[in-house]
Amino acid sequence: MTTRHHEPASPQVVLYALSTCSHCKAVRQLLDQLGIVYDEIDVDLLDGGAREQTLAEIRRHNSRVAFPTTVIDGEAVVGNKPQAIQSRLGEPKKGD
Image 1 (cartoon, one colour):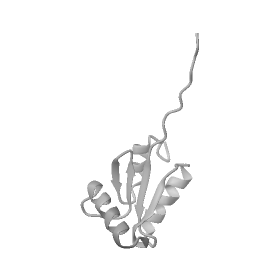
Image 2: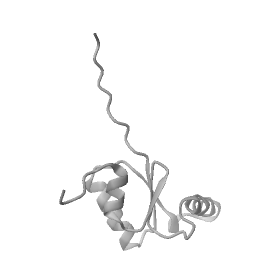
Image 3: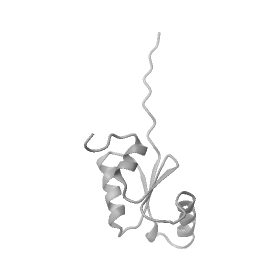
């Protein structure tokens, strides 16, 4: 009999942010503290077509295009909402 251990798949996380946004910085710090691997896109630093393409992508998740928008496995959390982010990640909330 062979026993195999499968690690749970890591969530795919994309943080759409603005480089000067304090709420975006807080979400970035949370993800870093949790050791989450994520892609960060600072939308205000993009030019022309790349910016428009990224804004269109954000609109699919968040019609108001508010920042930060954190997309976790295709589901968006809009704003600096640590409990919602941790819940989507399956992480225990601080204080639990």
